[in-house]
Structure formats: C-alpha cells, structure tokens
Image (tube, rainbow, N blue to C red):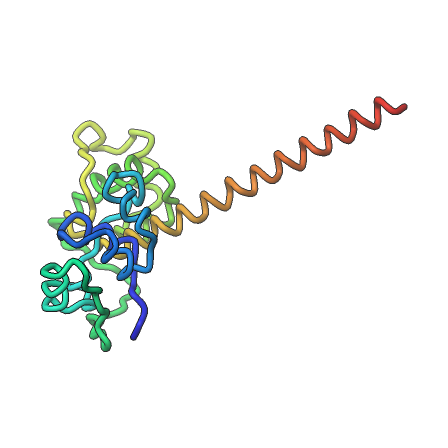
Length: 201
C-alpha cells in the first residue's frame, strides 16, 4: 500500500465533508485523534485547503461509503493510485479573461498567507515580483478596485500546489523562529557569563 499524499489537507476535507469519526480520519491520515479534533475546532491546519482523496485518486468512493456506514471500519488507501498525469510546461499560459484576476489573487495571498515569499506567489499564479510589490504597496494601477479573491476558486492554481507552498512557508517560518530563539538564548547566556566575569574581577 502506498503512502497518503497531503495527509493534513485530506484530513481537513474529511472533517469538513464527511461524518467519519475522528479515529477513522486519524487512522487514514496517520495523525493523532487530538489533531483531528483540533482541525474540527478550527485550531489546527487553519490555512490548509482541503483535498478530496476520492478526486485525487487515493480513495475509492465505495470505500468511503463503506466506512461512513460503519464507524468502526478503517479506510483503506487504494492499492494502485492512478493519479492524473500532469503535463509539465516551462511557461504557464493564462487565458486573457483570467489575467485580470491575478492582482486580486495576489491580494488574497499576501493578506491570507503573509508567510508566503514573493517567489512562491510567482510560482502559484504565474505573476511577477513587480506586480506583487505594486499590489502590496498599493501602487498598482487598479489598487482601488482590487478585491481579495481565492486563486483556487479563480482557477489560477490548484489546492494541492497552494497547500505545498503554504507548508513550505510554515516550515521555513518555524525554522527561522527556532534559530532566532536559539540565538537569543546564546546571547543571554553570553551576557550572563560576562556579568559573572565582571563580578569576579
């Protein structure tokens, strides 16, 4: 059996769209029941967009229905996942009708997910750093008319890619915070040693 892709995003979707028990979801997503409880309470995975495991080819609809009918049953991942083939293209083409939505999507991302780096926003919706800066600073030519709109709903990116970038940004932020805390601790320890040394003189 393979490994579930995007377990946290899948857990969010199952909590929001099914009546499965926390234990069933926890077992399927390889998470703790308390984490699932936290998702249901809106305390965990707040910024994660849910991913339907049936649509992503990781779970059979019949298997989901079987476990919905039996709260003691455990969901089984598809043995052979036929994930949709994605054509890799160097340049992303965005229809003219959707290009005007990019500034709205940028505004949504920088407001909702400020931890995302400009390079990540560029990758997600195929924009430029200059446009991102203009939207952020309010100097974009349509600044007064812009409305924050979800790029997934606008069709500029998919939920999976957005979740991947959010998780990367969160991990980077956590690492930076940890390094900062360590640096502060080292500085405090050094100051204590210097004070002790001065006191001994």
